[in-house]
Length: 208
Image (cartoon, rainbow, N blue to C red; front, side):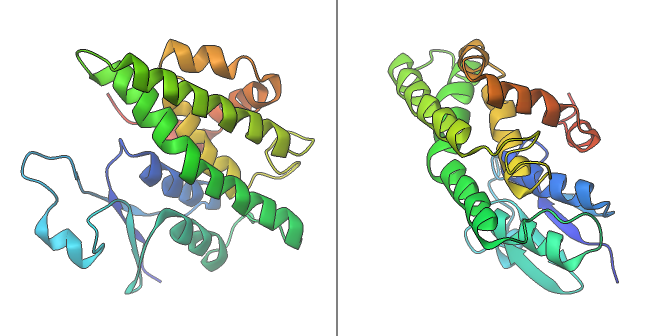
């Protein structure tokens, strides 16, 4: 069996989600850099791996995938290592609901509308940031209500829900507004401290 290949950039939240899954499973992999924000644009060859030119994409023994959730589930199911999905139907459905919620409502608001706007824009759009914070609050409220008792989002075992949430919230709290809002949700804050201490999280941190 050949080493899986992950295409993407180390700055990407979604590339990091897959990297976290690979790390937690103990899988050696190759990260092939693809910078979709490069001045020259997305490399032409990459569209053979992802028709929409987004990251990440994945390849394993000639089998190709794109879309983060599909890749992460494949990584969990195709390789040995600790299971990252609940076996019980309702728990797995809740895990998938958390992941879907994060994709639909959290990523844009927390990462782009708040963190990127505040960190990277010369003149941040304060109205956009304020709206992003409102959506982030709703996300954190929902995450708190869905979190099971125990150290992780689904309870006693780490799952793909934790690995999906961690890079998004990690980006969000790069700014003071994000840190202050997260602190209002003690259970999610405690979860964040715990996930941020995982060796996999340190190993997937962007250098520089």
